[in-house]
Figure 1 (cartoon, rainbow, N blue to C red):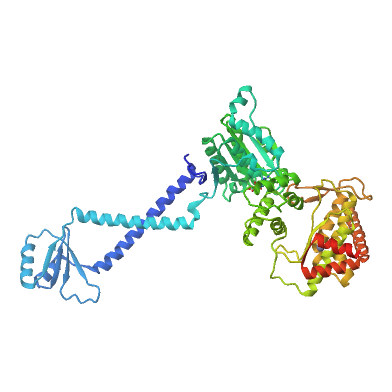
Figure 2: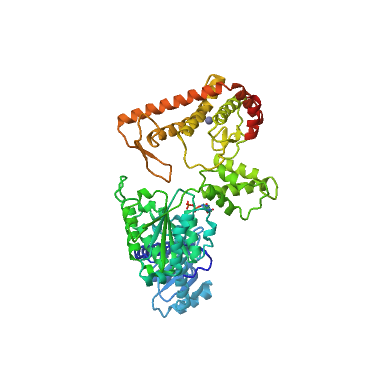
Length: 620
Ligand code: ADP
Ligand code: ZN
């Protein structure tokens, strides 16, 4: 292969026999259609150019000739065409033909007719160039039709294009990514370093008799840098990087996926040593006996992949990396020794990881001295690498928008809000009444944060609506990263979550739909405390629910009898009720502060944690 530029999308259907047969057939069909069209057109053309032709016996021709009725005569070797003088048949001039006869007297009769009646006659040379000309124009016409047809077919795709052109094998000769570009993920990098060394120097491993690793599975939530890590392995080892997404193997047509797998490995083999990266491997590698029922196409694709993995020669230096966020659904056969027997966990970054990620992405961004990446990292707990990269970029864009040369901390904090809550929605105007309700709701949350000392301090309160749906929110930022939460902290969280609704009820004596999200979160939290953390005395230390997919949305499945489930529901209700009562009690004891801060918020629309604390300490 001779890809000069580094990025290349290649079609993978160059050796598929079945496909070639199909292609030949379609060419024949199109050719046949072209020929028929040409003949039809030729006839029509002939008619238009020559008008209608009438056949007449030779004797009739001689009669007309001698009677001086003819204007023009064309003599071919096998026929004679002639046009009569009173050719008044409207637009279409009528020509007559007759079969030529070996008639020696004809020459004299022609001469006579020419002298007497001014009849024009000529012989037409049919040998050589005339025939060649006719054939040539036939061929040209067929060709033109053929081209036209194939153009239409290509545009329409249709049945002629099965399995073509859709499979994108993405090849980078040099990824240019190194481990330095991947922040955090130290453990993952460590376990991949061996792969790099192996790609550099497979001999070393072969000589000692070590079995070479064939593949590793990168497991983690979306956006944590799995693709980036795979590229970095290729970059560090300085080998080409082949990548393909699992979902692009699986098509409607049976057998296409398998042929794509075959092709991918074939191409990789030609460029070994190299890395093959299969993203979303769960799309093909889902367990074959899974409940959803099996479909034969995916199964065939998976079988082909397994066969290729068993078949290829490790000494050539091919390493297969695959990524997934649903390792639990993978077919066991994929995980057997000799296939993806190594698992590299790519977690969401912790505080240090987030600081490093921010640093990597801000390397080429001009920032002023106000920027504090640690503060940003603290404010973004739960964010993945892709989010952090996005935040830096949004911050830089904000600086450009306001015409500054350097990015400030304020830009970046705004960017965090944009990434997590959406852009400010300036055109959504709340009525004064609604604004007031939202303000009391948010300040209710915030006051409970401040009043229960063991929850996190406030960064900002805002009642500017956002594109992702929030009408307002309280932004809390921890002082340090926590890995454990105590029961009393969780309880305090419940009280805080329900504080919005409590404030609304206390102030307006009515409630709104604004608390839906709070209630959802509080319910989930209370449920987890009971069913997973063993924090309810009624149930003790029994696991009542288990997590189904750890790296995605953490779907839960119940592990208990229906009877217990009913009791759990009641316990959740009791817990939330207690929390709500506590929220109301606390707020009602601080109504002055609630009023003062809410009024200030209505006026300002956005206040900082410091302004909030200033008012609170003045009143208390
Ligand atoms: P995944 O494959 O896990 O879904 P990607 O590797 O595609 O995630 O990450 C998307 C982008 O997020 C990367 O191109 C990179 O800019 C950024 N990113 C993610 N994780 C990291 C990290 N650990 N260090 C630096 N950048 C990262
Ligand atoms: Zn709320």
